[in-house]
Image 1 (tube, rainbow, N blue to C red):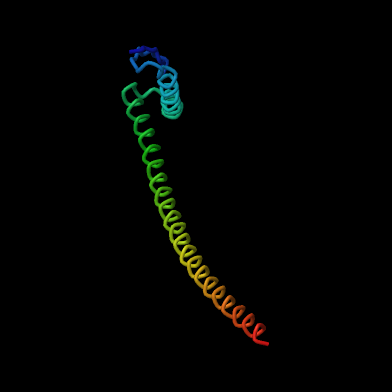
Image 2 (cartoon, rainbow, N blue to C red; image 1 turned 180 degrees about the vertical axis):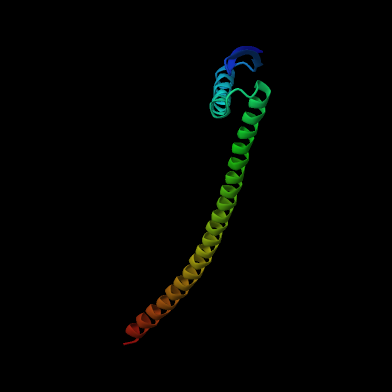
Amino acid sequence: MAQVTVVIDGKQYRMACDEGQEEHLIDLAGRFDRYVSHLKDSFGEIGDQRLTVMAGIMVMDELSELQRRVRGMEAEVATLRKTRDDALTKADKNDAALTGALASLAERMEGLAEKLASRKAAQ
């Protein structure tokens, strides 16, 4: 298991992570540190624990909003897929009807061609 040191609010924390995830963990810690710094700039020194809780709540609020947006997009994708499937089904039915009509027309034309040929032969 790999270990990295991250810095949040000027304090170093040694953390373990899976091999290959070091940069990801450092990035996540950096992003969280920006939340803490933003709150510290807004509210001043209100205590490490309180800053951490407030930053965690901000992160969860952002996560909740993103999850809501993802659900909306998933619903939109499902609607688009259904619309596409309905259109494909309708197109298949139209193709089948057109193919049937063309086949019937071809048979009638062949029948007429045979009648014309036999009349011509009789003359």
